[in-house]
Length: 335
Ligand code: KG4
Ligand code: ZN
Image (cartoon, rainbow, N blue to C red; front, side, top):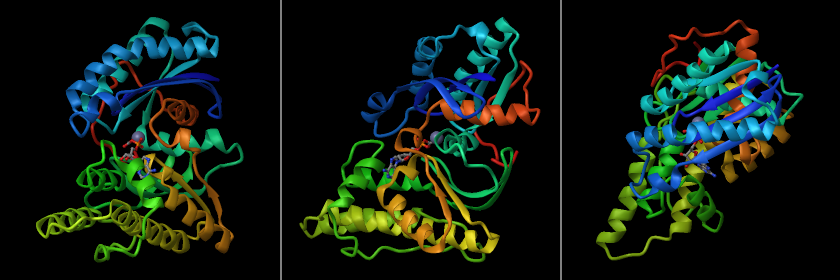
């Protein structure tokens, strides 16, 4: 089954053709990041307008790269939640138009489920059940994936997402949006014990995260040094911050793995590109004899190939939408 997939939940307009949930026939991503960089973050209205401009050419390119025309695809999958509502609506309405014109089935896909499915493209042998750490710019979850479309949230962030924390700390250090990747690079040359940063826990919720205090601590360190006329080493502060975030992520993820008896661990989302997170998980999983699957760097960020992968399994479980499909800014991954 060949699925044309569309993604427009944030600041990437993407289209892809994926066969049987596992084989990428084409994948095109048009990033708006340069445009949003000048404002220090994503401007929702600009994102929507840029999706409206890019969606037709990006889809045409994806079909062309796959060597297909629209009539040859079997279904159309689209990200319908969660994300920026105006951005999601561009993709949802466009996909509905394609379905109306062709009579193909419309498959609604949850954005975070698709991040998890990026792993199905890279790892043919990977099948549920497994435990997944989903860490993106907007979400941080520990999810038990019992089947392709049956998921249970075990833990989540109480405030900022991990990616958001990376971006805010990077911005405080003067790095351009989105910042997470630059902070990661700067940290490689720094001393991670240079600054003592909090490792917050959430009372009564052993698998939950809280990152907003960590970001505030970074802002305070920079502010206090500025008042004393002292220089803060960006490399050292980046390394200390990155270690604190990764310590928290790994601590909760491994605890959840032990308590749920999961011996296959998976990561998903933009932050799973983080160098330290990848390194530490590789070591821990090797020590414990756990299987570890992470998306290649090219599939960590937003793309439509992952939407085509999850779309296949949603379709197989009977999930097809009518042409009255709406977009939703928030939605549980369990739905
Ligand atoms: O999953 P994603 O592409 O978009 C959302 O669905 O949010 O994640 C983007 C997030 C951004 O916050 C970005 O800074 C972060 O992933 N990110 C990283 C790294 N690469 C991307 N954070 C830490 N280290 C990285 N290497
Ligand atoms: Zn994403």
